[in-house]
Length: 225
Image (cartoon, rainbow, N blue to C red; front, side, top):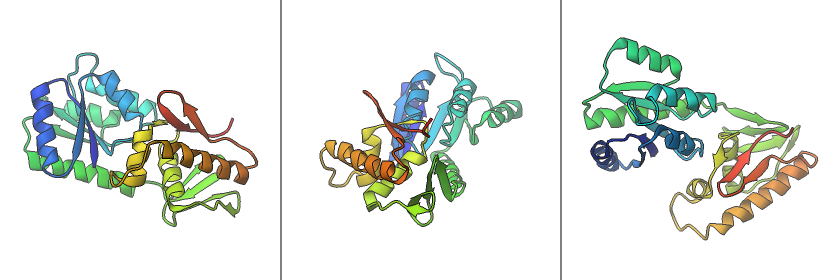
């Protein structure tokens, strides 16, 4: 599991990284809400840990910005304000859970696993993007009534894209999805996979383009105009 931790207190961020690391969870920290929003939009994280008090904006503003940008990554808010009013506002804004400080490390890990598990259960069995329909259960893709003939890694890449439709997906995120950190080849292989996937999608949809290059950032999947 990979977690984005938006927290401006360095000692808290370091302590949390150690606690999560003991359970095999990789945590990436950023101090600013705006930077956190940008990182979250890459779709590389399974969950977000969010502090309420940040230097540039409030935690609630971050949650609202994420949900407005269609970022569905589950958010666990960490706060020293235990009032019911605060929790209600955040949950209504789109947060998935709330944990009051100080908290016990095992509970933090348990809550993270719970919200990511619920997020996985709530994923649609089929995801549509234009003419494309990706069936998560059967690991297949079709355009109209015809199946798109994909290799295992091509399908994995397509599923990664459609689950993050509209968000920028980085090459590092695609590498992690395809290889999981094991025997990773040169990053240029991602360009090869994207090129082959584009050709197969174009052939299946009558020449439509779905995967677009975002220069300096990665790729973005969106429905044809």
